Image 1: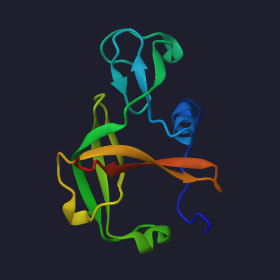
Image 2: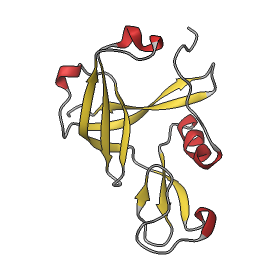
Image 3: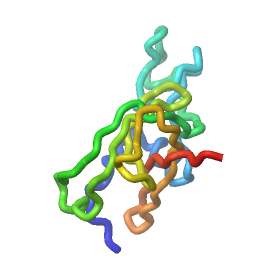
Image 4: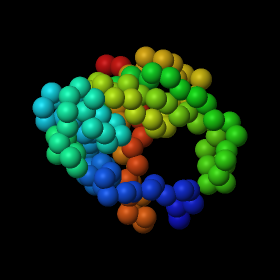
Length: 141
């Protein structure tokens, strides 16, 4: 089936993030000086930084986290999502610290709650050449 939704806007600064997704790895920026993690790409707020992200590096992360807050979408703003409502968009507090916004799949909207453990997974769209990060509930046991 052809992709009928908006495509991600990939710029040069965020290219390592998108390349990591294609390898099924969630990449975040980490400060080489103090180890703080960032999403999206940013300079470290705890000290002076080198120009051009010289103090920062893209690193693979666990992709684990918990739902910090969420909203349920009942009305779509793009026809490509019409058959997917209702769906949940959540702000995930990653184990590494940053907040990460994405959809939660494989759970009914009324079952999502704050604190729900999730794992970032990957939705490949090979015909378009990109992969999207999605959250999935962590199954107990």
